[in-house]
Amino acid sequence: MENKKHVAIQNDYADDYAWCYGCGRLNESGLHFKTLWQDEQTVTYYEPRAEHTAIPGFVYGGLLASLIDCHGTGSASLALHRKNGHEPGDGIEPPRFVTASLHVDFLRPTPLNTTLKAVGTLEEVHPKRWRVHIEVFAEDIQCAKGVVEAVVMPDNFKA
Image 1 (tube, helix red, strand yellow):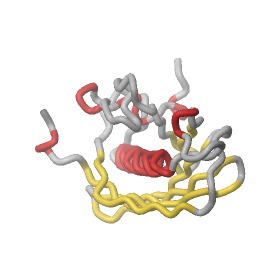
Image 2 (tube, rainbow, N blue to C red):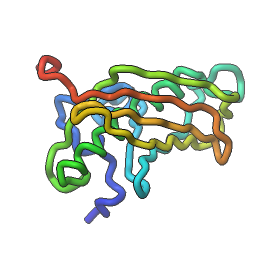
Image 3 (cartoon, rainbow, N blue to C red):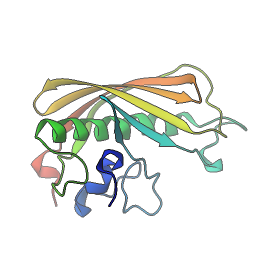
Image 4 (tube, rainbow, N blue to C red):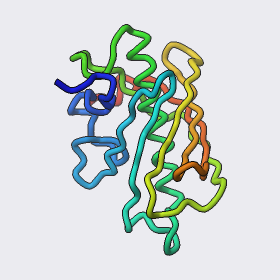
């Protein structure tokens, strides 16, 4: 049995909502970001591929923005799911969030051949709105930071 402490929230998204280019497990062409708890913060690890090149040796900024975006919505989903008394892998479908606002600061060039680590710190703004402060590291060097305002997915998004 998989250790629930190491289950990504995206694994539990309903199939109808698992198609996001950044974090959708069902999108064959997607990036497949996975967001987990790490103590009271959240974490996503990602290994950029050659096609994520901006200039030789460095990551395209759009990938970093996508990482921050999806890490933010995944983090909000983790937080509300936990607030509701659940954890990933417990068989209960988590709430799905969408991005209301995304702010990204690029702090330094991000090397291509290293694993990226996004760390999220959560702040509840409203029961259906969370603010996630995110730092992105390449090894121990912070390369980017951002803030995502995530809101519970509106009913009219449902097919």
